[in-house]
Length: 324
Image 1 (cartoon, rainbow, N blue to C red):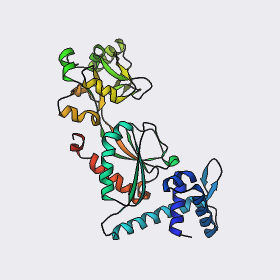
Image 2: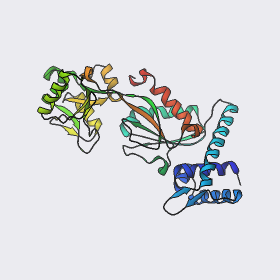
Image 3: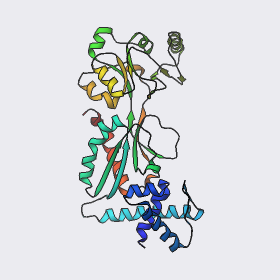
Image 4: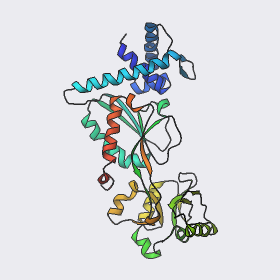
């Protein structure tokens, strides 16, 4: 029995939650994974996992053994890296998932450079707006944008995600620029349709004073739906055009058809080029985040995952990256 491979297999099954997920991550048949686990349990003389056709659960001994396995594997990876001829070298299969639009624009361009620095890696990038089950589907890392739901997954903030109302110069020349969020009700707003995201609406910060309360009453009286959260309001403007695809809204906005509420990662280059103009910047809501999501604690993550997260953090943390 290859003891190190057996430990890697056990840790992979335990963290991913199934033999099939661990098998997909390694590119082998589930039966191979099962035989390794059987050999490890026979060698140790204890049951580590309770396996059924529906789920896998750790025994008490398995839970304690998992902590030791992850520590050992992390130390082995560090020892290998320290003696690699070319410096820190990652190997294996790195499986990453990201939202489609963000992934095409900002994650996919980083993959070839990362692979060039770590040529022993195989990298698979999945672009999907579906919320992927990392452990169940065998992914090492997800990149996610926006507010995160409560979860047992580990999140690492990579950068701020600011949202701005923007319009093309042609639209502003024709209709003028709104000076307060309430004036959006008199503008053509390009909104995501109800079956997409942004279900809470466009967020703006309004001062918490008498005038702010008066502004809220005016917005509500004009038919807007507002949710109060400290000094942030959520406004659901309307317009003659809506779409479930954010890229279509982006194209319509560039063409001068209305005002859109977009993330800076989508529009910063167009703003820098003068193709789009921010409006209502004084009312911009606090940013949410862009995150790397891991299925388990980062200190136990394989070297390839830790290096990938560092790569993302370095690139996304550079303001010039978003203006390129």
